[in-house]
Image 1: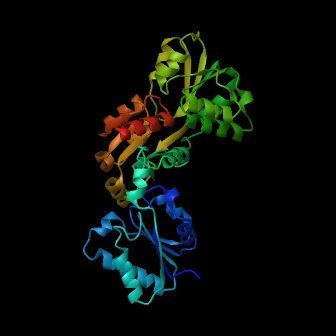
Image 2 (image 1 turned 90 degrees about the vertical axis):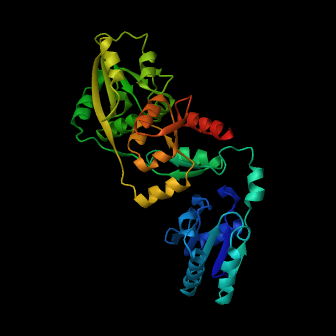
Image 3 (image 1 turned 30 degrees about the vertical axis):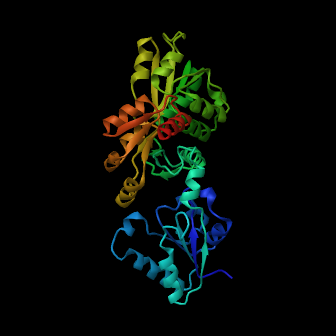
Length: 373
C-alpha cells in the first residue's frame, strides 16, 4: 500500500540520480509539491493530470513559508490525494523535512521518507563535469529545442526551456508557389537555414512534388542545413564552412554567377548581405519567404522565475535574441556565432560566450569551456 505522503529526495541536480522508489512514487502521485532544487525533468514522471505545486525559492523567502507547506501536505493528504514532496538532495540534510514529518505525524497521516543522493556526495562525484548543475536557458523554437536540451541534460545541466520565437507560415504562399512552379528554371537554389529547408519542402510536398523538381544546383549555409536537405533526399553541391552569409559567398567563390538565376527561400526578415554580394557578381537573385518568426507571449511570472534561477541564456539565432524579453538582459549570454552575437549585443545583452563552430555542438563546447574556467 502506498503512503499518503512521500518525502522524496530528488538528488543533487542530475535527474539520473533519482532512486527507483522515488520514480515509482512520482509515477503514482496525484499531487507533487516541489522546490527549485529538484530538476524540472523529474516532474515528467508524474501523471499529466497530477497537480504540480511550486514552492520554490521565491516562496521560501516569505515568513511562515514552512508552516504553509506543512499545512498544504496535511490538507492534500486529508483530501484523499497521494502526495509527493520532492526536495533537492536528501530530504533530511538541509531540507527541513523533519518539520514536515512532525506535522504529518501530529495529524495522524502515514508517510514515507525516500532518501536522495546529497549534494555533499553527488557534486564531488561530478566535479569533472563543468556543465553539471548549471541552469541554462534555451531560447530556440520549441520544435527545434529537443536535441540541444537533451545534450545539456546529458552533461548534467538543468535546461530551462523558454522559446522566444515561433515559426509561422508566410503571409501569402503565392510568391513561393510561383517559384516552385518554375523550379527547374533556376541555376542555384540556396538555403540559409534548416528551417528554410523544412518549410520549403513542406510546401513543395503539399503541392505534390519532391526534390526531383529541382533543376539546378543546391548550396547549404552549414552542416545542419545540409543534413536537413539529406532528410529530403537532396545532397548539397556546396556547403558553407561557416554558418553565416559570408560563408555562402565564400563557398560560391569559384562559381560563374553572371546571368545565373538564383533562388533563396528564407525567413521573412533576414540579412541582405548574401543577395547583394551575389547580385554584385551578376547573378539574378530572387528571394521568397518560406516562413516568418514571431515572438510568443511569455508570462511575466515565468520571466521573473527564469531571471532568478538561471546561470546563463543561450541564443542560436539573431531572432532568438531580438525577441527575448528585455528583463532577461541581466543574464550573461552565450551566442552561436558572430552574427547572433551582434544581434544580442544590439538587444542589450552581455555576450560572454561565442561558439567557434557556429552550430549547437559548437555552442555546447563553448559552454563547457566557459564553466570549466
